[in-house]
Image 1 (cartoon, one colour):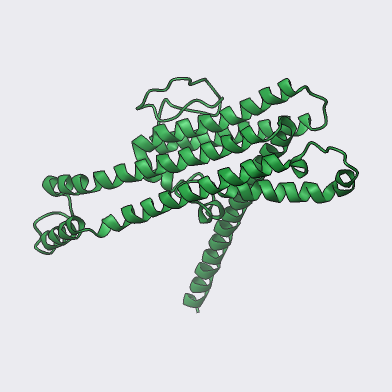
Image 2 (cartoon, rainbow, N blue to C red; image 1 turned 180 degrees about the vertical axis):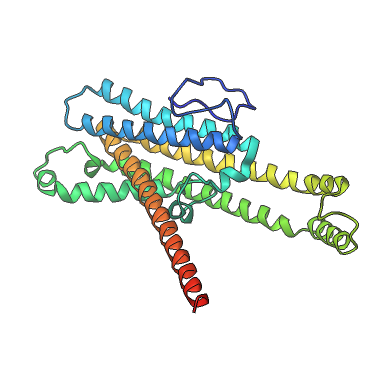
Length: 296
């Protein structure tokens, strides 16, 4: 398992890995490398999950596989929490994710209610694929075979998740508004006046820097608290769904979750690379045009 990043904090349960690092570099760089290793490990877990669907395994062995995958998610949020204490802004604007993924982020990660959309989407697809078997009264043991009791339990946890998600969203909105509170407006005006009077070298004055740090510190602390609540809800949502599903159903849910995450990450990275290449080509063409125009 990838070694926990951010060496400034207690790193219990850390294990050596060729992917993780904690010996050098900033906390952000460390988490970036940790994430890359974590994704590699997630892909390996996916292969194991898929293999289990074509192999006759006991419920005990399936449960052991499920527990390992869930622990992998728990490990990710443990690492993220540690690094958020070091640099919460990096956790909210992750450079290790693609622009495509960034566009769908909710407070530094996936929206918890999305897990239910994923579950119902996969259940619908599997239900349609095995409709004949289900009509004959046969058990398919996948997500298309959810019982009435399971559906009621999922509906209940979904309602609680949506309510808490909205509460955290409102909490973030209120915190964002504090950027324009009286203390921030007064400070920004005071620093601007000093700059206009050339009393400080663009905020380089130690006293000014201390005032700015003092004003921004509670903002970042508030962001860390909100991110922690959001990540806690994400993890509890995953655990809640897993606890409702039967082992074979859980395997299919975890496969769908891993596939969606890995493919979006892959597609986003490819699009970002393609965009950068296109921008570079356009810039080179513009330079060539300017040179040819100048030489005439």
